[in-house]
Length: 154
Length: 154
DNA sequence: CAGCAAACTTGCGTTATGCAAGTACTTTCA
DNA sequence: TGAAAGTACTTGCATAACGCAAGTTTGCTG
Image 1: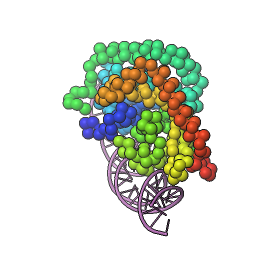
Image 2 (image 1 turned 180 degrees about the horizontal axis):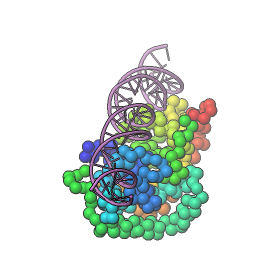
Image 3 (image 1 turned 90 degrees about the horizontal axis):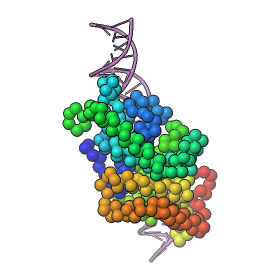
Image 4 (image 1 turned 45 degrees about the vertical axis):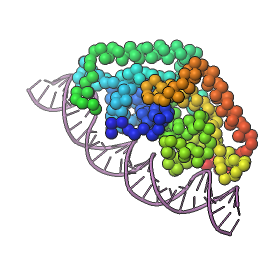
């Protein structure tokens, strides 16, 4: 299946076709906020994603251009994933999820404190954070080319 | 299962535990933008949700306090669903999905035009629209009490 | 009271998920 | 240099969720 059949032309529906499940955005979260970059690090997250599901989601995110992978120059057996611009652009969405959860779900005081500063200058925070993520991404691409796309479109 | 087991305390994870699937946010969309209020109207949406899935999601949304249902005073055999404040608070999130999709997915020109005006005053749009939705909700609650909660917690 | 409509429920086949184990390729180190 | 360990997956199989078609229930309508 080159591209899963789209259910409708609605932007929400199309978006959910991509990341509308219980795992995909958690990988994005890990890439954004947890400094996680490798398969093993994603596996170590509290939610406990299964290995096959993780592999499937990473492939989907790559196929959709939301993440990219480069081989670790220091260790050829490890793969480093990072967000593309399309992935970084999910930041506002992820933040709004946080803000909704903060208002309506039992969220820890620590996270509440962080969100307080976010809310004081949402636009500024997004810009700064996105810039940082894009810069990270740029550096990784500079160091190495994509390792996984050795033949054909995967 | 009174409340599905939470995977972690992360706000993103908890939120996805509630509406992290391919259907739930489409119901919210229909309630917000499409003027749909009944089971039959949700069924008629382009994506073609199955009847059992729709019933399950409506129950979940109600259990989570995101929607409420009142019986139609004019026709006791029809049920009218509407967003609670917790549901209306999903508006910023839904808008950010739209904006991401507009930038990265093939979205119709008509929707792009609408989003242009949204972007010109995002905060104002959210306030106005949320006020309208909350007012709608208030009126429905005034007319009737909840019909479905006739005995115990459903 | 017959017929119809609206809102679900049920049964069952298909697909996706979750768990445990296994494979392939590096890297490390005695 | 070769055995052990690390990293990134794949595979097989049981369980759960989904999707479709049909049936049930309740209220309205003529």
